[in-house]
Length: 158
Image (cartoon, rainbow, N blue to C red; front, top):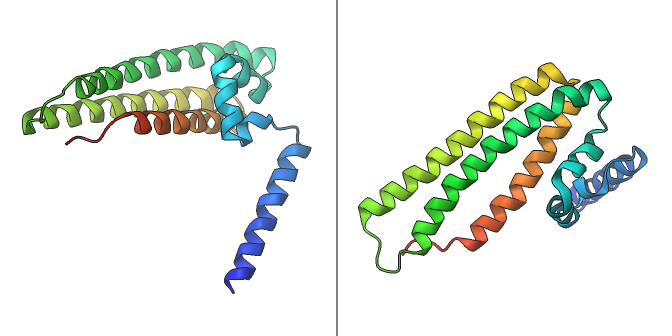
């Protein structure tokens, strides 16, 4: 029974990959390492290629994108400051500092979620829903590997 489920899963994944290829999907969005490389090279160009915006859509989209990136950068700065204080702390951590660090990280997450929600609401009014959802998906994938990189770099509290 498990073999049948596994075979069905493999077939579904192969079909999805062929379907995406046939539709001309941007390859980096389907390959996390290629996505990481494309983001490092030029995130804005990757977004433009992935969304294939009309001129009218681009006029509406890019200001929303820029505002979201600024909010995301502010949230990233909050996390960076918290992480720097953790890494620079080379003695046993007090409960008070642990509590403060946890609160700072939660506030940064909440700020990112608020910015994403605001951006999503704006996108749904500015773009066709499929393109808005595609951008949200792309941004989510980008955040996933960035969060992974951060998780690897941050030591656990002792």
